[in-house]
Amino acid sequence: MNDINEAQAITTKVVSNQNMVVPYAVLAELTHRCPLQCPYCSNPVELERSSNELETRYWLRVIEQSADMGILHIHFSGGESTFRKDLEVLVRHAAEVGLYSNLITSAVLLNRGRLEKLRDEGLDHVQVSFQGTTPEVANRVAGYEGHKKKLEASRWVRELEMPLTVNAVMHRQNLHQLPDMINMAVELDAERLEVAQVQYYGWALRNRAAFLPTRDQLDAATEQVEKARSELKGVLVIDYVVPDYYARRPKSCMGGWGRQFLNITPSGKVLPCHAAESISGLTFDSVKEKDLEWIWEESAAFNLYRGTDWMPEPCQSCDRREIDWGGCRCQAFALTGDAANTDPACEFSPQRSVLEMPLRESTSAAPDFIYRRIGG
Amino acid sequence: MGERFIVSMDSVPKLPRHAKLRFDKARNKWIILAPERVFELDEVAYEVISRCDGAATVRNVVENLCKKFDQVEPDIIVNDVTDMLQNLADKGFVVA
Image 1 (cartoon, rainbow over the protein chains, first blue to last red):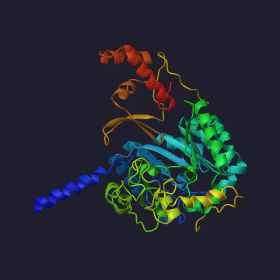
Image 2: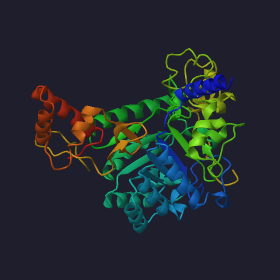
Image 3: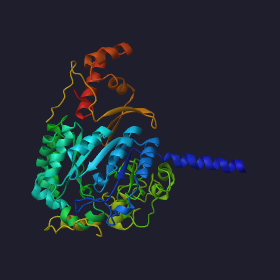
Image 4: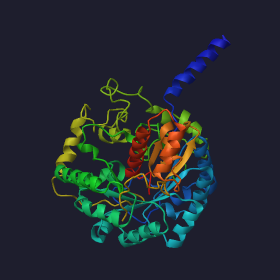
């Protein structure tokens, strides 16, 4: 009898392991504090206060456990990551355990000395966010006078011979600046330009009508990117994703839920994606109580939408189910009320019509921003 | 502003500062780590990349590989190596 039970237990383990892959990257959200107030902020509407932030020793343990389980990249993010005074210590430890470290920052709090220190501790890469190419546009979107400082800090990054990514969230109110943004990235000698789209959950969902570009804007932007990519081959890498409201197929969100990526919030909760807290009814384990590897493999939240078993039709019988993994769970929840539905960004989604209203809105006058603020 | 690196037999290719070649124990393969990217190397790619140390020319790399893989036509090795390096250079994984 015991033998049979054991045999079954082994089978279960083997079967569940078919869905279990080693994650590639961890996003360490060190804080939600930020001087900027971008109305599309990806932090949750309920921001974590600084008194709830993880202490240094927990982050050090997370860094060690990440490397042990085979993670390769660590992104130090926020809020504004440089608010944390222990950033240097964390960067050093990431270098010690062999993680490739990336600092995601608005750069407005940086000075040259601190950047140099971070480089000397082993920081591999810096990613600076830009909200536009002129102070008028950029400072209005950010709700903060920071554009000039961002340019200055980006130059320090290159003077210190660190690789630079320019991250530009582009939308209805700044897409006309895309050619200038590409030129700016080249002038700043960035290795990489990330033309990011607003993702409509949390803060951004409240501001969707102010941000969703029109079809014409989008087509012009795609053409500009294609032209720049061929002209700047080997000079600047441009990552560009079409806003998925206009797509026929959904994005492969996070490369699949619980397949490549995990996110740790300032208070230590481990999420399958940075927006996962926008889905009601999920509970997330904390690095204070559990090992990262246990959370990745065993926790309810990570297993809920992992693999393909959870999928409804039309995903279940779709030949792309292991390409796009059903799209984005947070978007399915935000637009249909059920995270287990097919992402409406797929043209085969039975709820596809929920995109009609926002797409119509994109052609009428844009409303004012609702800026990100503590206490929402 | 940088310029596109065109790979020739006299080029001296190397990994850029932001790219790191390392063995990934968890997945049992050689990889190049770069911002937001992991480039998995097959055996041939590893044989090429591991010889690009910033001192050897592409010609040196090819000669070295011709000795190791003496059953393969040298012309094929020349083409494979330059194609692979040009491709990696265009993606930002190899610099002059």
